[in-house]
Length: 418
Image 1: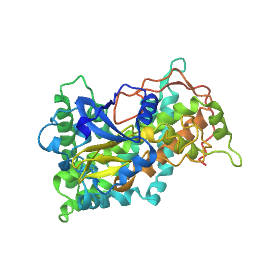
Image 2: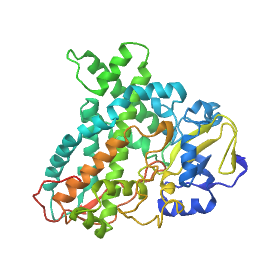
Image 3: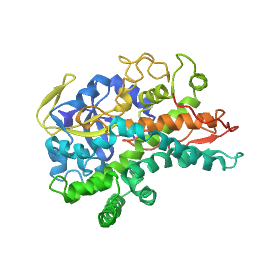
């Protein structure tokens, strides 16, 4: 049983690659301890993670977690925002399918691909701002480029001002990058501030005499035209799209830029192009595999006793999937810790999860990363790291808090995305 097993402690400060090695050595499904002393199972290899993410008897509905339901998990637990609320993220069954259907069309292939010219335009505008930075000092590429790019894109998709995310940035960060030193009160403050802001935004959009053609307006119409979406689901769905619509892409961009800068031969091969040369899209996929932006997918709950990877999971047990470790599965990838844009298995990853909760925004995140890489390295082919950045301290996310670089000479050519 889970409570009787020795547990591997998941440390937000740990090096994720070293953590993955240790998890692999312990087995395919490992008992772990999350911050706050909360215990769970986690899948460590690709096949087991895929089974966990797609298993019909594992739900994201927290009502199936007895420890949360009976109050053993306090409201100020530092990961509470990752397991409760946010509409479709933690819904199961018919409710999840209903909520997902309402927004899925906006993230299908054709609408996302139609955004490519606008994403490139935004990337170019941001690099115009970066160009004004002092060349004698390192430039924080995360702050000036990787962060605002997906924020501006998702805000345009939703039809909301950039200021909505900018003004709430500290609150969003507080939820996805938990702080073990806090007493948890700031979690409640962050959630309340976000909900107030989004509720006000919805009221303003609803009162607009000339409704716009955007996703927020469509969601409001779904609420007002029938029973497909209630008020809380409307706010929570908007919250989920805003936060997931930029956090993963930020880390995908920064992780892959860093990986390319640390592997100059790989970068040169993509920049040089030519027949059979790797593309920016190849670099994106390998970046997602090697440096998955989501470290651990938390949590799912067993609706009945099940067996996965030879381990009995009792009804009500919480189960995670270590997506970063799954990307380094030796049975799936040769020399998995190497970053190789030519890798045949580069697309064989779980960076955007799997199954019913497979990330709706994965196409948009990939497109944003691809455009970001192409635009950035075409304009600054001599870009170099100023120093290795500090990692985010997070159980759920894998990335860097800054990305200090030296820009190098600017190249005037317009980017070509292959």
